[in-house]
Amino acid sequence: MTIRTVLLFSLGGLAVVFAGAWRRALRAGRSDPQRNQPPWPTPIQIGIGFITDFFDTLGIGSLATTTTAYKMLHVVPDECIVGTMIIGHSLPVVVQAFIFLVAVDVDPVLLASLVTISIVGSWLGAGVASRLPRRPIQIGIGVGLFAAASFMFMTQMGLFPSGGTALALTPARWVIALVLNCLFGALLMLGIGTYAPSLILFSVLGMDPRAAFPIMMSSGAMMAMAGGLRFMKAGRFDTRAALGLTLGGIPGVLVAGLLVRSLPLSALRWMVVVVVLYAAAMMLRSAVLQRRSTALTEAGVG
Image (tube, rainbow, N blue to C red; front, side, top):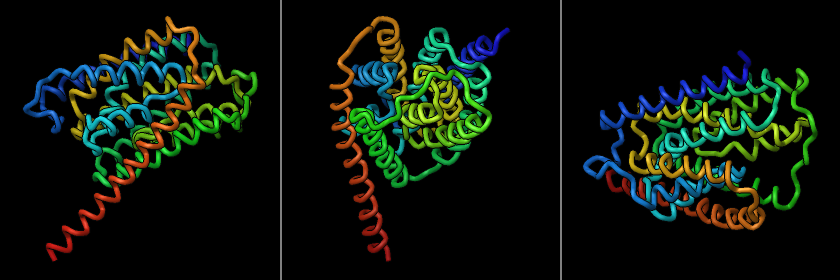
């Protein structure tokens, strides 16, 4: 049995465990924002899942676009945005990983090692993120959105290295990739997308950018499910919105990965840059207002 086959079975097995844990969390009523409300997501929540995971499969990313939609449409409380995204996007990213693992060649040892270390990073990061209060989460998401917009802008301006043709790395470059992929896993749990940094990393290391996709998708799926389990345990997610991401996201992935052959991605990315910058400003503004409100409350109590 090859490493790629083992990884495919591992993804499938973890997806089953993840789905079972999600079902138990729903039965236990661990998602506070959705108590006393209908269990099924709204058409808007499902539509957000379809659009964001459609973009995600094309390499634009889903966390920045999902956060933007949630913030502008007031779908999810700020403190539950990260957990909702991590849990809701997990199974759609598993579908992405299956598509790219089958379609794109990459060194199997490199693939397995980077996926494994990303799980470690995400598990550690989720343990911190799932306990953070509202304001640090707002600041973290706001900074992450600005970073995502900056990466998109640099991509549009052609400021990233074009990459090489390698499907594997030298030992020294492999260690660099391991360390940074672990960091990416931790940052993902703060709502900071990893696709753009990963593409930059692998391009700088001389890899074929296409080989980055099975690594990114497989790592993303494993990271999201590992971190999502911790967010479920903490109850820091919105049940209906997360389910909407999954129900809309899986068809979005299939349409983008299997049916779409060409799209004006340049124009789409410019649009996403503008919208994400607006959402970042709004998120940081909310953090400032939260601080002022807390200061006034403390002053009143004193």
